[in-house]
Image 1 (cartoon, rainbow, N blue to C red):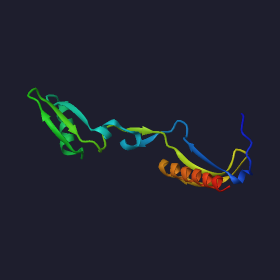
Image 2 (cartoon, one colour; image 1 turned 180 degrees about the vertical axis):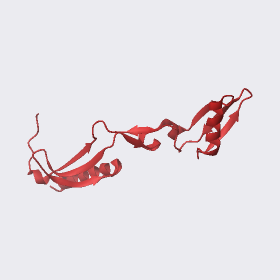
Image 3 (tube, rainbow, N blue to C red; image 1 turned 135 degrees about the vertical axis):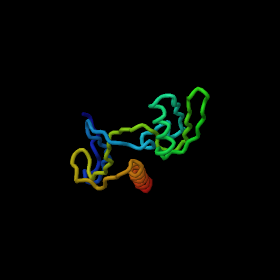
Image 4 (spheres, rainbow, N blue to C red; image 1 turned 90 degrees about the vertical axis):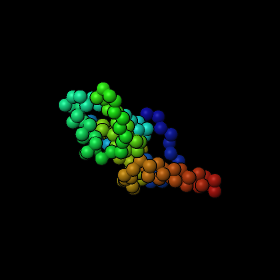
Length: 140
C-alpha cells in the first residue's frame, strides 16, 4: 500500500472511521433507510371480497395507527391512501454502523477519542476538525 509519509507524529493526527460488522442486520426505521413510502406516502389496494382482504382492511382501519383516507369502489376493492411521514408496513433492515474518532493514524492508534451514535454527529465532528486544520494553516 502506498501512503504519504505524515509530517508530524502519529499522536498529532485523528482518524475518522465508519465500521459495519459483517453479516449483521438490525431493524431500521423508514426515515433511516430512505423509504419512498415514508417520504411520499403510498397507496394500498385491498380486495375486501376475500377473507384476507377483509382482515387487512380491518387491521388498517382499527389497529394500524396510521393516517389514511380510503376510497371504495363498487367492485369490492378499497384503496387506502397513506400520508407521507409515517411508518410504512415494511420491516426494513440495515447494517449497523459505528462512527468513531481515534487519536493517531495508520502508524499508531492511541485509542478512541469519541464514538458517535449518529452519522450526522460524526460528519459534524469531521467538518469542525477540517475547519480547525484550515484555520491553523491560514494562521501559519
